[in-house]
Image (cartoon, rainbow, N blue to C red; front, top):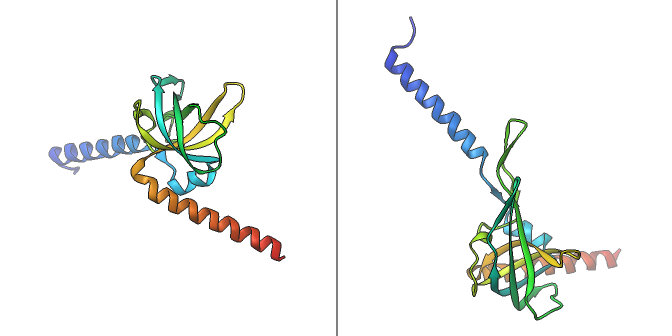
Length: 169
């Protein structure tokens, strides 16, 4: 004899809920840690946001273009005091060959919420020479300034130790 009808309904509902929630979890954006992204950044600076374009979705990607005026360089260098033209691009959750793909992105989640006049910390990647735009790895709120400065100090200390070890050999 099988399960009573009410138990079968409950079992069906629970199973369906688990399957649906599993698919929903697989369709989330996964964010890299700040430490990982700081290690990839060419330049880190405090900036004031100028103009911000509407985000543009193209296929599985979404990007936002904006400009920012550097206020203080924390790591690396910025060659200009004029506003820099910047782009943040992110892969969106999608299906590939019937499987859910949850991308691992460098952003913090705030890159699409920028407003003119915001003061933020920008972690830059490389410059697209043809487009004359810089690739943004991540944007952080000013509340992260002390943590970022501490982490950058730790990175510099580790780099110096590695250089000293190379010279000692």
